[in-house]
Length: 302
Image (tube, rainbow, N blue to C red; front, side):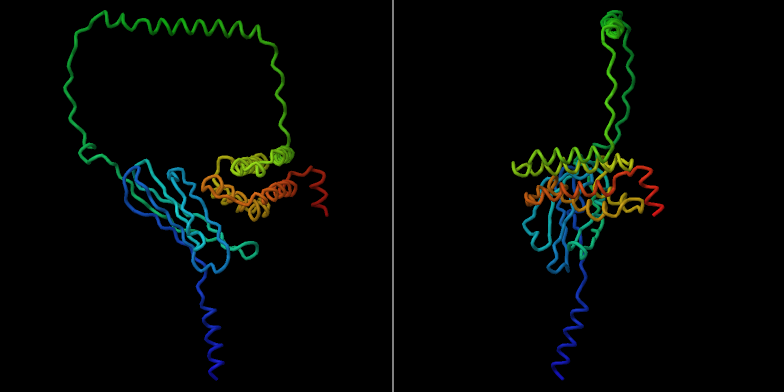
């Protein structure tokens, strides 16, 4: 009887185990311009699953340092700074817990902070306008500035003459070379990146910066939206639309998040895994490239 009760208690305790959760703490909540802020992201209830932390990409916040000493306890801290006054909110950031089919994405809570000026309140008070003082007109003051319009007219005449004779002397400009299709350009750039052998030379940051640019440019040209100007967070919101292949959201976004960690958080990945990112790029470009009209019609008919 006691053994059965013990087994039942263990089952109930396992069923009541807390689910994974993530919190973001930004302190202090009130600071002055240029003061350092500490952002701590903590994941709980993850068990033995790996945790992939985000990097703050809000342009208002500047990252000064990254503290990864407690990353084994599922904690990552950043030292931030703001150089403007007002109320700012560090928006939600995705935290990926687990890997593969077991992975789940959790979102941090928004973290507000109020930044005040270092000037005293009296410095912001408007002072009364001083009365106008009339000064007598003097011709020498006008003549002292007469050289400015004369120089401007002389410069304009020289520019007009240079432009007129330059057109006659220059040969006919060659036609601009047409751009390659998006998928061909991406394949060419990925092959060039592979041939540079950045990981073998210890240049991991250069590898991930160029890899992220190649894949974002492919998305921008293939789907006609400004992927090069978007943060990874904004790009994830864009790819949630059902008009895009799910492989971009499920496989490309983790690679871009890893690139952000290398570029902004000084994360050092395994150099042997860089070849896998190149292969992933080739595969995603081949799956999502624009197909000829005839081939697309045959697939619809099938």
